[in-house]
Length: 540
Image (cartoon, rainbow, N blue to C red; front, side, top):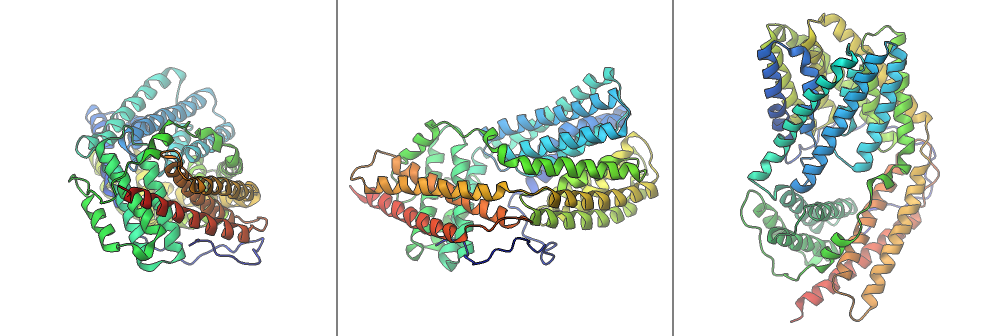
């Protein structure tokens, strides 16, 4: 069943929502992993600097340590590459900021550089699908470094500190693989099984879309996990069982699916299924050329323009108001930009609410932090943990901890007057959110509609290929498996494209009827491939 809902007239101007923007959701299954990882990554460098009496250098080690926030959902083979890329990207952004700070004292020039760097970071994070926390942490570090007093001779040493801390963060991120080497794949498979069970029980359109996305995410995780061990093969067969449940929900056993998902917790053996055929299509997909991430750069051009314009306007306005840290306004604007204007609006509301509550928390905690350098470091560690523990529930809730942490970090270099910090933070938050959203509305994203058209064409091609293979008496081994997953991926991409385009402020009417027909035909073909696969597996 398709998750699309047809309607005759799509309004060219969408209403911006308020209901539900601050509603709390369920925390991530692994919320504690980034929370603990960032504490373990930040604590040793900061405590070492504390012992040496050089907390003024903490900004540089924090740049590397915060890389521990990334890639917790990825298999360890893919995580190693992703974390290395994040560390190099973090050091590169820091380097640009420090060099610019050493070459010019013009605040206007520095804000301009910061806006351009933020746009590049946003596009690269979206194109590579690095995942939370995305570009925001990178932009925070690079923007703050623009206003750190610096000479060219100091830059190499400061970058070495960031790289050393980033290497430690890489080790922290990879360490759990020693104890649970298939943990990310097991979690992704369990999520797919639970989503399929939920759809088999309720059979609602929304549950269908969620379940198909979960299955596709599980396949992407397994295909990026490196060598195909026996454990991986067993997980692949479980994902096929989730696909079977989606294709024939009336015949599915939700209790069995959930039982398999529960067995995947911990380090016990992966459950074996009665359906035990080899998945030859996986080898074909692994042998096929991978899609290059830079192919996604073109469609992201409007998002890059929004980010550059919004960050620049926010920074310039902060300078005009006489704020001493215009990078706060810049980072606020950078943090807003999501897949469309509607989501950007929601993030803006969450950011403002979280920051305003956060400055109140800072006002309450600052007397404790001022007891001494050790108290300052411990408060920052506590807020690091709290931010990652809460942000999965809703962005504004995590911002309540992020805001006081950012304010306390400014005190590593020396005492700051709390009243002034609070005032500047509030003003920069409001200025950054307002002008950042103005830029989002000013830069239209006509390519969102083009993405839907391209996704429709991709679905039709994938469906035609799968149908052609179904019609063959003896399709090549593995070809139908590969075609099925390609069609499932195309359907998920189509749904994501429609949802992104539907949230744009100004947008031409979407081809809703074509989308519905394409999704219905695609899901029927998927069901047919599953039935064919089961029939082939049942043959002696």
